[in-house]
Image (cartoon, rainbow, N blue to C red; front, side):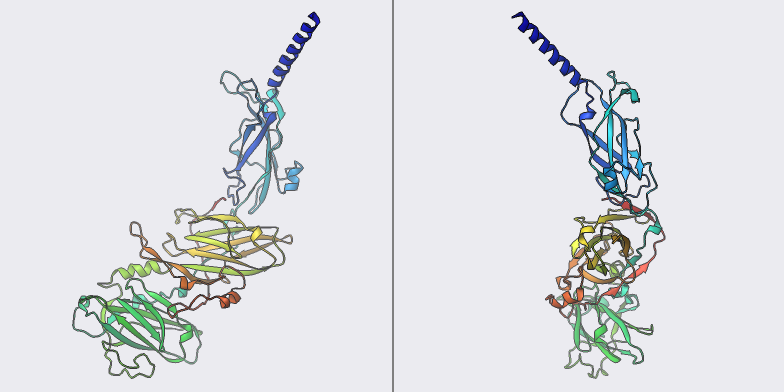
Length: 534
């Protein structure tokens, strides 16, 4: 009986000693290092800080210690250029070694200089330090540091484009011919001759005729027309209806290259003045034709147009004799009363239609890695082989564009393939005063070689289904027009021509032809190149 009690007391003492011993095990040794961040982001792309700041957290696995004030006493960060080197604990870019410090946020990278686009893999481990119990500054000398934790899971970041020279892509913007807005400032509002005041025209229809003669010694490169009326109009070119509109402050536009020929080209318009009592009436428009030899011919509303108030048989035909028609009456100059607002409207609408821009290219094999850098003055959506690269909307973030231009980086490795590929940019003006512009650079590693595809003059563009209406100024917003007739199936995918022929999107006389205009390059002389890490 006495022996049994002695054994029991011995067991209790052993259990108590074991508990005390376990309570003295450093907590960090049984903790996980988690939540690795670079510049406050998880595995970010496009970091533009030359010395990125790293951070991590320590999470207890569940074992508890009675010691108070425990904390990190040291850390070791390893940064490698490949996952394989990192797995071997080889930091060929940076190995901090054991650093006696309790710092676990904003630990600045201090390794080899990092060049643009560099992909960095990293991990960290920490050592425990027994802290003070009187809430004074805890010790971090090696004498109080225990065993290291296990290595954290691997994390990564990629460097952005750090200098202007890292951008091989050029700034591009849509060709102004795409919008057909040239020359309205040289036009006059016209109507059929009437003795009444400009603001007291009868509610009726006016008929107009004019001619534009193209020379036979030079081919036509392109031609466009821009027109509006108070209240509405229908335009015919060489007898074919090509454009109509119903708003005096929103000019309509069309590409008419395919409709013009050498010699006389006849333009006829039926313009209506709505309402049930006299009100302002007028027609405003401009035709612009560019020849292969560089000459430019224009036809503006003004004394070159004839008009009358009664419809006559065959008035739209080229052979119709309009000798008896009087010259149209000038109602006001462009920007004059009562249509002053159109001057601001045209200026702000010049690049208002959102534009599709695209580039097709071939790859010998699927890339091992591919990043896309997008720098836009406006708003955009980026597509690769028909798929949107992210769920971003209203990208990039708003900035003071006179000082700073933001860019965003995307990993598009899984969207590219061997053979034909296509990158598509849907570009909208947003808050850009001078019209939308941008640049896109794809950095790809194919078969061990770097391949770059960037915006330049080889990209093509086309007006999309969406366009802004109104001035879009501070406290003076406009609206948006969506015209589904302009949808081009497969515009963001390879082999557009083949897909377009199979498209069943209806084409009407007011829909512009499916011509893709070349992009125009431009320079940016001010601003900084700042990334928005993702």
